[in-house]
Length: 260
Image (cartoon, rainbow, N blue to C red; front, side):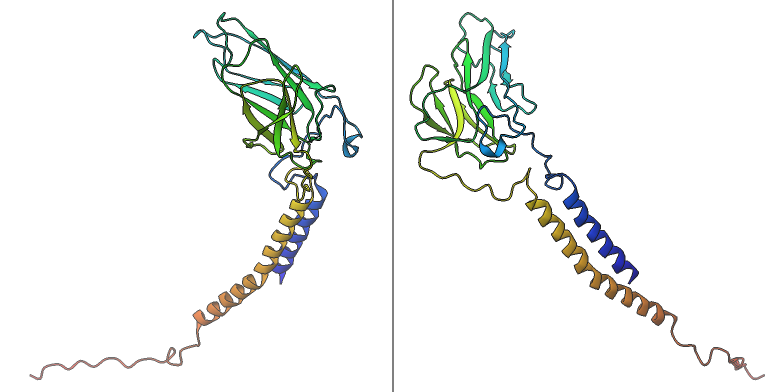
């Protein structure tokens, strides 16, 4: 009974801790850094901070090609990233290339698009020769965008680029050979999918994990008691009953000798 009480106390302590710690502690991911909106939605107006821009000068390496680079915004957790391979730019002059990423409040008409991210303008002093990877982070307070959309820097209609997915939570990425405006959006007329149980910012998953651990611990109590009972029975059976003949002396053995 003492062991069962200890297990029950441990289960209760785990459940209490799961409710007490910040969301995301038991998810396998840390709590998400708040997203910085240019135009925050109603859910995120409180304590919203302005998003940051990013800049990098990419130099030319010893091979005569521009170096590989990752250009990102200066937010605490970068919200827009451009990843580039060696020789990504068309650079016959073999000179450094300037790349800028800026969050925009003015951009081409979205035409019904619903965006879950800021609209970012990606610019470079020279055109791309190889595809770059555009990665956008989105808020854990909004449903995930289905695709990345783009519009030309000089204005024009938005077009869908799609999504290559991302290995990190709350990110969406796509490859492109043309820079310009980029945003993570839902297509016109489509309704955003409910966020559901979140992995990094909600309480749902920690609660499920805590309850699962409690069930496992409670389920093991009868088995532990059963094994304890079996071990006690084995111990008693090993000692056995006293031998009635143990205290008696045995008569000396008689050897038959040869007659002379």
